[in-house]
Image 1 (cartoon, rainbow, N blue to C red):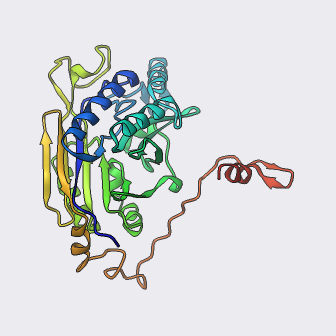
Image 2: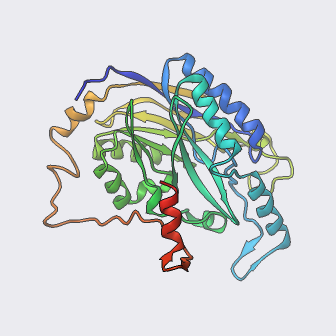
Image 3: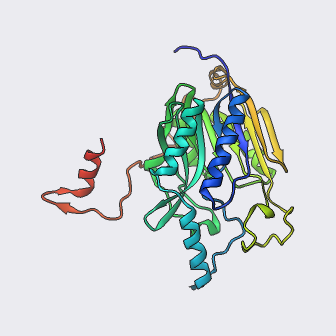
Length: 326
């Protein structure tokens, strides 16, 4: 295997324009340009950067009922989401291609009537190369987001290394982490909405456990960044911090290379040297020599879980679609 020279990765702790795709994409362009000016070859954005993370919103829901106002709020959020593939995906690809950089970015995907919290991957040619749908929305997120399945858990072979993403509290799912380690993930992206100090300790643990680089990215948001009419438990002070950040970059030995950053919009950069992964796996390879498959085994189902299968002319319509997409 050819040894790759060290290179620079960037983690964006950015402030989008919540629920406004057009203005947010303009910010994405500026932030990518700024990261590339610092030498970045990979730029990682937070969870739900395009489409918005509706922190504090209850969408008029309570056990046993939903309000008309809550339904309208969901409709507005649905309208702020993006189609994948679709024109906004093409624009994000164009940004990656223009700057010749890999981009990993959190979006809210609209698929028919359901929304999904997703991460999209773009290559330096501008190609859209994959997506990951969050498997398990956390708490009240389940009111507004659907569940992903095992068909969108990629670890992508790129010129920078093996690249994948695990979103927010998915990082607390040991079996999901194990599945990613087994795929050989080297560049473990962790877009999140968790700004608690304990998050950083989790990122260090994952870096040590997986002997991988962890790039954790969160938004920085004040109350004034949300629309004035946004229903919020955070008061009316436009300077009140809603999302404090906590982004960081950690090496395979758990050493923090950049961050954690709190209380500001910033771009963190750090040198990535993949040789450190082999150095780390010398004494700990969690799905290799340090595993015990005679005692512990994990089964991962990566099939797409379709709710409807149509049988037509002796074959399933689902199979026909899959063959036609190859």
